[in-house]
Amino acid sequence: MRELTLNIKLQKGDSGDNVLELQRTLIGWGSKEQPMILDGKFGPATEKAVKRFQRAHALEPDGVVDEAALSAINREIADHPFNLEDYKCTCRECGGFGSGRYENEYLRGKPHIETFHMYEYPGIDVTLVWAIRALMHRAGIPKIRITSGYRCWTHNQKTGRTSTNHMGKAVDFISIGAGEHNGSAADKIECTECARIRRIGIEECGFQAGWSQPNRISLEMPRHGAYTWVHIDTRCIPRNLRRHVKEL
Figure 1 (tube, rainbow, N blue to C red):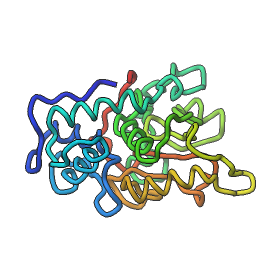
Figure 2: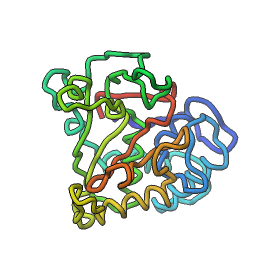
Figure 3: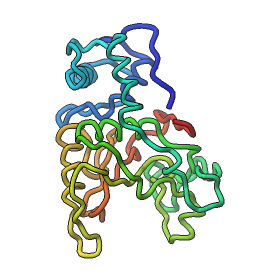
Figure 4: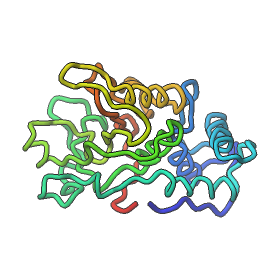
């Protein structure tokens, strides 16, 4: 993934594209009370997220994104790697990231919102990758294994699915080396490690359980069927705030 680069310091009161990119990278450093919202405005929630990040990286928590804070942000790329090869679609026909079909088309009978947008995005949402990195850091996860990555419409047809969120907007994973995986999807028993990760995502990162609120990172819960994996997605974030990549 391309590193975050800034030519100026960022601080409370700033706005614009640089702030928006900063908010993407710190999407998982919000809180339950003040989740990070991608609005391009460096307000109180963004400042508090910067301070949390600084404390976690032994920096002075002044809320200003300077060279030291920027370097710490970019170190997260190496410290919490995301393997794009493991995310690619397994249909053997689309090349890994769909075929660019169905842009601005929506599931029949559904509202014209991102949740039902049929477009095969050409990569993975950068915001999603940074959310995963933050969750790995805050939950002490050394490594993840992707259990379900990109799923294009060819993949959906082969498996009888109609969901759109795995077209660059979602990933399912389990942690490696951080806890015990003892759940059962068949018996509807929640994995202890998955429950721990979700709890941290909600209580510390500011993610939401389910999809009730717009502009929030979402976690699928056991009541939705996620017993033995962690599902995280950006389907509630408007696509005009998206940036997808094919290389990390």
